[in-house]
Image (cartoon, rainbow over all chains, first blue to last red; front, side):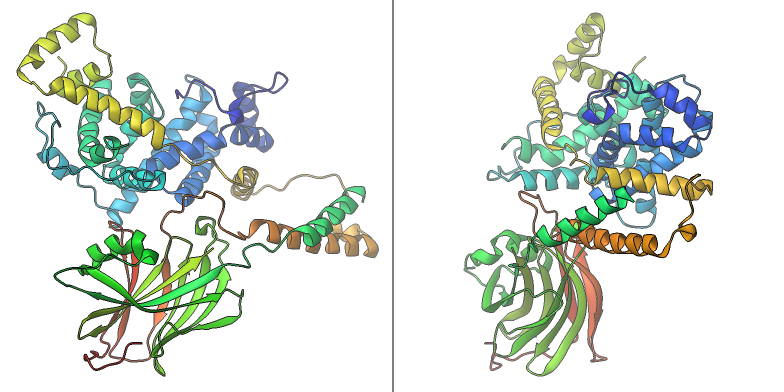
Length: 208
Length: 151
Length: 169
């Protein structure tokens, strides 16, 4: 889902409701009620987006709140070059990535990108791999657990591009805008992140 | 004050109508013996879901139940569980309000071997999230204890 | 000039121009597994879209309330009101408000404290050791959480070995 597209119930404006830019203008003038309306409009998508990166409901709840608080504090700097949600999305993604980095620094998680990348030469493909044993049909819960475990093994940058591209469905340019990097970097990160996930999850998606 | 009367009425209605669900939750505890044998037996049905993970963590290929006990959870009241005549637990459980607990409990648990207290612990558990305690070594393997909420 | 990784990704996502795609596919002729790998990568994407979706935000209004409270705290502002302050209320009004608050708190407590496993809740592994003590100075109690296997074990070390003659049950 592109940041510029609105689909969720939370984000649909009623005809007589002020649009985002009106609410932003009022927020910039210090109107907290106007900002609350923006929170209500985007809270579900913010939570989902952060959850997809951090894979933990409680963390996603807390980080989404931090993200909105940051947005409030910096709303004066929003100049309208992009949609409000694209701007908010960038803040939220940074909050999520920072949180993963902090966890990494404090020893909570170790990403083994290095292991993954050592095994993947640029021209290498990840098929076929005979050593993976087919598994029995697994429950939705187990699938989710496997996805969580696999995503946690990606570095924050790789996790972000996978979430933005494969789950949120953003275009390369939008991903580059959110992550503040070049399209080439986005494509390169996607290459490695996909290879890694193919290796980690193939036994699951091949057996569903 | 009309609004206040309305709140008063709603709150009163909530208090008298909401059922105290979850009162039927049970706590299941067991004493397990984990060992390495040439022909491992299939895990007990109660432990099927976690046995492989337990095996990975502890390195034993067989887990058998030596004894088990179940008690109805009485919020804040202490219950005694005696899975075997030599091992017992005193458990006080109260519902956890943590969002991620999903129907879980905060336990105050004391584990005894005969009359000797092995450990006094405070732990959170939930359905499908059992707690394991690695106990003493035994000539045949490793004694483990498991505590599980059964909704 | 795009790197191999960039062109490979663009090829998988169908983002190369026709000329770029044709040139790249010629380059890939020496990589026999490239096409199956592309299918596999697309399958991975489809799998993630179907299964990696986030749970919905629960207590959404409470979420907004908390954000508003944090913003208000940060801003150090108080909501302006032209109504009478609470200390200007009469004693019966205060009594009424107090009772209403107590009842409302009781009602909300009953509503919000989880009272059973939510139907169909995919419960992530949750067990957690908050605290552990032993009376025996030779025995240590260490919480061990193995994220790989999703198991929490309270690891007691230093307990007496039980010989084969020891009765277990």
